[in-house]
Image 1 (cartoon, rainbow, N blue to C red):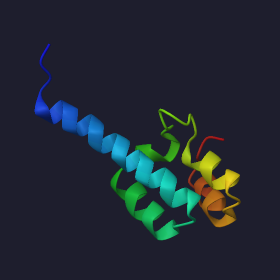
Image 2 (cartoon, one colour):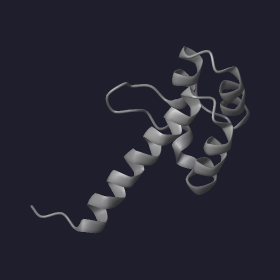
Image 3 (tube, helix red, strand yellow):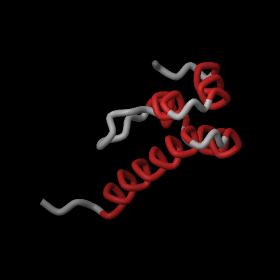
Length: 78
């Protein structure tokens, strides 16, 4: 089965954006979280394939209260 380049790159870019969003939350980078969320709101609850964690879990684990508050205000699942 041959996959189309657009389908493959779309999946890859979603994974990359999810990782970037979770990293932003873990680093309390609210500005980056806002920018990523504005472009793709579905990132809010996207779970990492390896970690099994969403952004709110990573922010909470690192004690990043501003990021946790932002995520709750934006209705992240927890």
